[in-house]
Amino acid sequence: MKHVSIAISFLIIICADLVSQTDTKVIWKGCVKIAEDNTPIPFATLASYKSLTMSASKADGCFELRLDKDDSLRVAAIGFLPRTISYNNAERDSSGNMIVFLEVQSYYISEVTVRPDQKPIELNLPSDIGSRMSGVPPNERRARASGPVSLVYNMLGGGDAPSPKDLERMRSRNRQFQQMEHMAGREAIETLSGLEGEQLDRFIIYCNIHLKVSPTDNTASVNGRILNLLERFLENEKDKK
Image: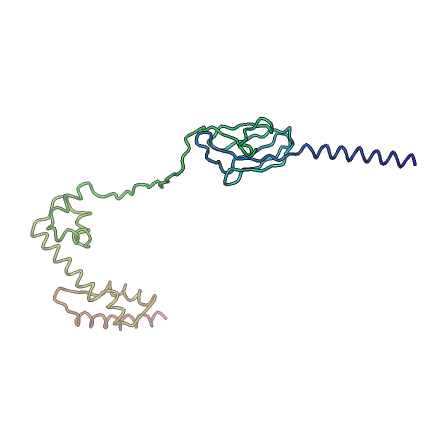
């Protein structure tokens, strides 16, 4: 009976100690706000010195923690001066909830516009490209910059504007080039030959080497030459096999 009494007394002491420890836990409930305008600070860091745990306020700046009454809470947020509070010295509102005011440490901005860094494009154009363009009639300036004959002149020719005679000669060559492209270009060769794929590419190269077009030619004469070259090309293809 004596041993039973001792065991019961021991259990009572343990339970009392546990109850006393449980009683030290209290609810820390409140909000973190900006001292200047009372605006809530979302996701502020809350660190307990005694339990060595961390938490954060909600999106509305409010928090609710269960900590020891004699604990201390370190409250911090980016751009604000941190502050340490205790359960008894914390400011409270009319409802008894804590209010933790943080002072602004840096300028608090509500919006940031980010512009990507645009690297300059180096075109490596001639220094006198503007003067070269000015020597051509306005209605021809775009053609002179983009046409194959004018492009060669602009890149390799002199800086002075061409004479009327030279300009007319360049125009004539440009027209010849466009005429040849129309009568003996890739689309025309593909339509006449009926070839495709790599075989078509080889035949186009063959035409570039052997086909001659003069200003007096027309579509019919050029087509006849292409067909003759096609016959020779196919014979060569058979011989290679």
